[in-house]
Length: 255
Length: 344
Image (cartoon, one colour):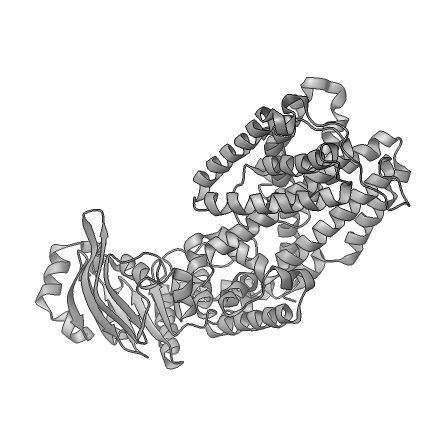
């Protein structure tokens, strides 16, 4: 599904991601863990095309996407969420989601001017898609609320829905459960399982170990930009290198 | 229910009433001067609509807007006064000129983000002013351009008179607002708003940043060119001062007061402030003593402008009558249930 070969990203003299190779299988939940500053978010930025790698290759379903611009990678089916999502606060949840399907539409300025059939068709499709995504994340009841008026947890779900509205094959979730309570965390875990059950591939960065250990099919551990371990939760949990990195490293990451 | 807000806004009644008022205004006005003031307010409003596209919807603070207004005015002025073109061909040329220049300035300046973009466009605006002021062979420099042609009236009306010109400007204003309404509700408008929310998020939604930003920029400069050309046809005499940066800041003020990123904001802000300024005219330079605090109060209490505040208020009113209420109750329930659990 997603194959990464010897991926390296240098920021000046610092290797934020250093020679990382990994293979994420389709239809699985793949987790990336590691202390703060291990290069996890940079790794996501490289895959989604936001940053250009210094060297290495990224293959999506066999297609080389290494040097593709971000918007093209998204069109090929890589959806993602960010740690914080800036939305249009004074617009409804639904209005914020409609643009998610924009990349599957082609209407331009001329269509707007003459209000073409194509524009009408595509706007309906985008609206339907937004409703479908809202339904998927269980937020149909807040569709008409302003973003400013919904809860933190609901905002996170809206960010999920926005990624889903792009019709992705794989979704990259950057700390989906950060800043939500344990009960809500369980809700997000269930949502990710539901995504996989619907044929998506999930890739997430997370610090909440309880959640990762019970949720992930496969875990990759990054430390100082390097992959130090990879495997099932069981294997990673008992890996002495990982224990060393965590105990000797950032305490807050182990929490 | 979801689209209640939309339907409130789009209430045809309110729009028709505004339009009707604009149509009968020349008959209600005490004198020709008032009609003239209103026509010039409409011209500025068209320019502010343009600024609203790139700055309000797309989120890029463009400080060269007054410069493009001047380019529109000068293109029309020079083509009619010096080259002997008649009004309408020169008018079209002014639109093409601002669109093409907008494209080239756009592809360079939009490589920069946020305040870098603002500073760059501030410089572009100033360079436009300098060019107009110093390139005397072309622009006549500080002397300005005189004897600009008025719109030819197709044999029926005489646009050198105030009232017919007022209706001409009104027609262009209505078209500008109509197109803006269609744009803002369309997928393209939503694309611009997504860019305003954040470059990275927009890109990861598959939006080509550069293409969409340049498109928004060209649309905005074309609006500025349209307004500038109408302005030149109205005052018939222009000078380098049209490119003064103060015009850009005036337009930003109109936009902020009316409501940035809203459909009726530019109109309300421009017409409102132009009339307030007019009615404070008797205070001469002291009018800023009233006008300044008024602006401060407005920005504090209505940070999203008059229209923005109104929309939020309407939305909350609609929500409190609708399912939102039920939801709030059920939330209270789950919260108290959670509390009970914790106590147990």
